[in-house]
Image (cartoon, helix red, strand yellow):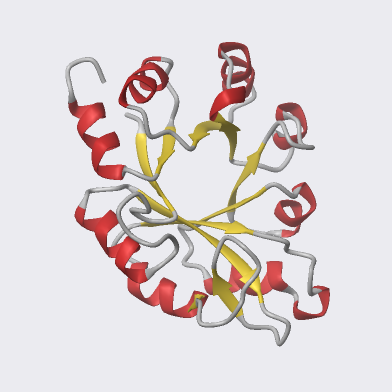
Length: 198
């Protein structure tokens, strides 16, 4: 069964990385909500895709609302920007035990201890390298290939693809046996996966 991963919440309908988008993802039946975390200059941890400007949701608030209601995938953005604040270690301690940590930065994921980690591949990280420390890999949709999926599976990695909003592509990826799909439209993804061809 392919997991439905709400990319930054139900971000097709609502502002991304916000509590309303997360609540809507839960209502839509997503298996996981994925969100981005940045550090502020004073050491705060906030949920946002781009560097914080003020007024963003605090990581602690997001966890309080989501934990126990939906799976959490937390992507570390610029984890070394404020090294003095130990962003990687603090995020790992705050997240529930069943949360998954994602990043494009292999060093950040290797620093996460006792957590499932998902390495985005193809942007400075290889599938083979990720297999040494990661639970799974994330493929950018335009770059995913049958060969890459097969290689990841052969190395024991869970496979995910981001970000897919087209139903035909959702069906195609599900038929390829992808373990999880990130989508801005978790309701459409869920409905597509339930359809006879999905």
